[in-house]
Image 1 (cartoon, rainbow, N blue to C red):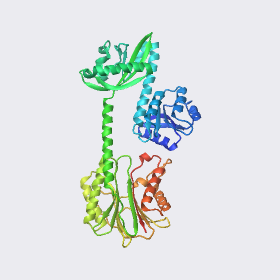
Image 2: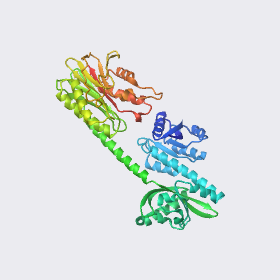
Image 3: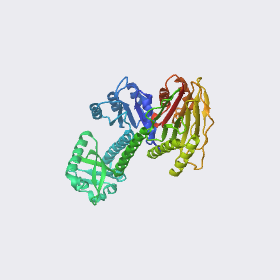
Length: 507
C-alpha cells in the first residue's frame, strides 16, 4: 500500500513538477499535488492543509525566500524543501537558517525520497512533542501513557543530564529496563571509548536544541552488555512547573544504515555496468558506399540489456544487429555482453544469417535460466545489390520506409526469442530489395512503448512520423531525433526504457 501524501509544489515548470511527483510516487507515495508559481497563488493554496512543500529557488515572479516567508506566515508546521537548478552553498545555508528544512539540486534528486521521509518523520516528532508537552501539563498519567506506547525510545532528563523517566521502548534499543536507567547519567548509553567526546557533543546538542527548539544527531549508542548500536537522537526542551527538562527521542537506525550502504554498493555496481556497456557499443558507424548508416543506444537510469552492433560477416556484406535482454541491472548487462560475444563469433563462422542466430540460441540456452531471454534482429546488408536479408528472434519489427513516408515493409519476427528453446531454428527471410531513398529502421521496444500523460504509446507510428519529418537529415541526426521525440513524449523521462536505434539510408 502506498502512503497518501498531499504536496504543494512551488514551480513554474509543469514538467519539473511532474518529475518530482513521479519520483515521490516511485518512492512509495500516492501523491495529491497542486502547482503554484506566484505569491498570491501560494497564499491561496496555503489556506488548505498540506503535508509537504517543494519549492524551486528562482521563479519568474518571486523566489524561494519570499515563498518561505509566506509559508511561515501560514503557520503550517510541515517540511519546506528547496529544489534548485544551481544555487551556491552560501545561499543554501542562508535558506536553511531562514527556516527551510532541506535543499536539493535538480541535477541530483537521488536524495529526494530519503529527504522527504526524514522531514516527514521530523514533522511527526515535532507534532508528538507538542502533544506530549500539552498533555504533560494536563496530566502526568496521560503523557506517561502516550510515551509508554511510543515505538521510539523516549528519555526525560534534567539539566544535569540525569535520566528521570524512560519509556518501555528503551529496552528494545538499549537493552536496559526503564527502572535501570532512572537516576543514571545519559553517558551510560554511550560507548566507553567515545563517552567524553560524544558526551560533550550530545550536551552541546541539548543547548542548541534549547536555542532553536529542535535538534537531531546521529551517533553511536551502547547497549547493555557493551554492544554498540547506531542511533538517531532528536532533542527538545520543555518547562514544567517552573523546571527545565530535556527530552530525547531515540531510534535504532542500524538496519537503515546497513540498507543505505548496500544501496550505495548497488549504485556503484550499476555505474560500472553501464560504463562497461558503453564501451561494448561501436565507437562509430561503418562507411558503406551508397548508404548512410548510424546507430546509438540511450540507456535507462539503471544498467540495461539493449544491444546493437555492426558486424563483419563471413560471406561478405555488413551485419546490422539490435537486441534486448529482459530486465535491468547488472545481470542483464552481463548477459548482453555475453550475447554480443556469441553473435560476433557465429557471424564470423556462419555464411547464413539464420544459421548464425540458431547457433547463438544454442549457446545462450546452455548459459541462462528460465527467467531470462533475448530478443534479436540480425540482418545482412549487401551494398552491391542493395538487398537486406534478416532473421528475427522475437524482436519488434524493423521498418523499411519509402520516400513518401509510407512503410514499404515490416520485417516481422521469424521465431521465438533466444534462450527459451534449444532446438529452435531460424530461417532467413527472402531477400528484401531496397530502393533509392529507402530508410531502414532497426530498434528496440523502448521507443514504441514510451507512454504519455494520457497513457498512450508512442508506437511505431510515432517512429515513422519522426523518420519522415527528418528524412533529409543524416542517419545520425535521425537517430538523435527519434530519441529526443520519445523523451519529450514520455510522461516521465526518468522511467524510459533503454532506447536503441540503427538507421540505414539508401542514397
